[in-house]
Length: 78
Image (cartoon, rainbow, N blue to C red; front, top):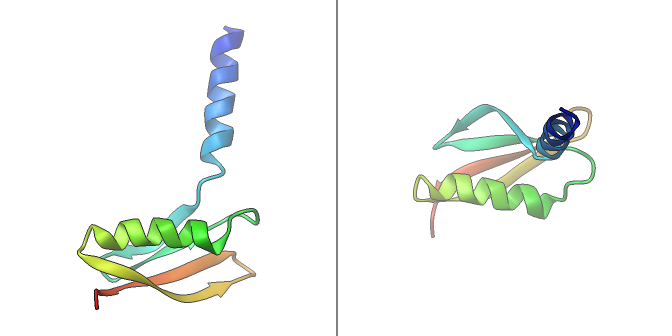
């Protein structure tokens, strides 16, 4: 019983560290809501992986700090 509770608690705490994606998450781009300890490099890698699934590359658009988020567009590869 205790082992199951500890395992569930660990899984929840680990998943809480991953950036959450909301809003537009399609071939046009992705919005990554993040936590303060995540770097732009980490969110860029996630955005790049997302855009590659559409044969595109990620391009940084902006960051917001009231609602901590990074915005990326998926653009044609050059």
